[in-house]
Image (tube, rainbow, N blue to C red; front, side, top):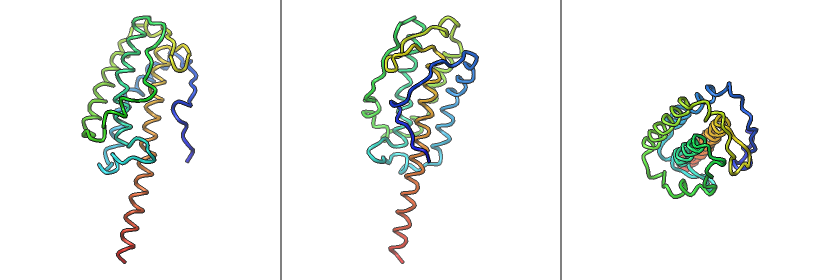
Length: 187
């Protein structure tokens, strides 16, 4: 499989055509279902197991939840006509301190679904003036419209969904090898 690029190493072309607004909105609206589908068959043991000092599957899901207030706040920035979008915490302190592995996964998924549906509803009802405004993205140092932000969020969602799938493959394979080793030691 191809090696994945780190999120902060990615560059973005921020020129998504406005006619794609409804398509990108559906992509955002669909993330909770895709996340739930990806995690529904994963054992609790695999959900909370970390790999190579990285986040667990459940922590990746929690991270998506942790960023919903940032996305909502940035939408507020567009509506208010701000020149620059509020910055993200590039250290991801909220996720590191949240202890998502101690929370029931169902609560994380439910809260994410609720927050994302509220956000999608706001996007769906956004007036054209706000939709067409540009604000400077603080890390990318580039002007961004609402649809560009939506695409950025969708890409971030997919980045973590891909990581969850990758972790599931790796951790499942490790678990299978451990079972095979235990079985062979009893022969």
